[in-house]
Amino acid sequence: MQSLYRGRYLEMVKTGHWEYVRRCNARAVICIIALTTDDELIFVEQFRPPVDRPVIEMPAGLVGDLPGEEKETLEEAARRELWEETGYEASLFENVGEYATSAGLCDETVTMFLAKQCQRTGSGGGDESESIQIHLILRTQVVSWLEDRKKKGQLIDARVLTGLWLLDQHSPPA
Image (cartoon, rainbow, N blue to C red; front, side, top):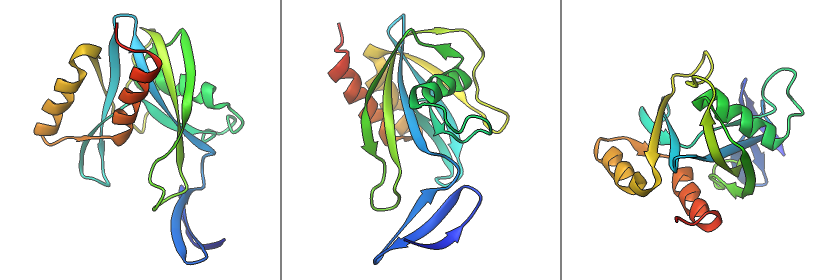
């Protein structure tokens, strides 16, 4: 593997004829499908400069990117990110698999967690570098809510669709 460019957070590399990007500040990425005790899904909304508009996402983050936390487990990072971004903690956490995010562009994979029985214990909103809006949407109203957001010009992160499918596979609606 040949390094073509290295910045603070990303590195562009070449393997054979293939050029791609990888993170140089974290070990992994996690995403949380968070379900409250009231059967609400927890979404976050953030403005994302690369796409120049707000994006609806599930809580997510990096693993091992914080000084002193380089060896945190995937679940520890997922619990930390859920609380930091939303102010919620979950009684039950289940790893529901690892998935490629954009295999033609980067080496990144995301490990998805199902977090059940989430209850609010903090304010959320992210750390000092983030401006996160939290949305609690009844599970039965998620599809129509997402369609409404798309009509308003917001993007829906593809992990939301993956997360909804995984939720139905691992915790079918009542």
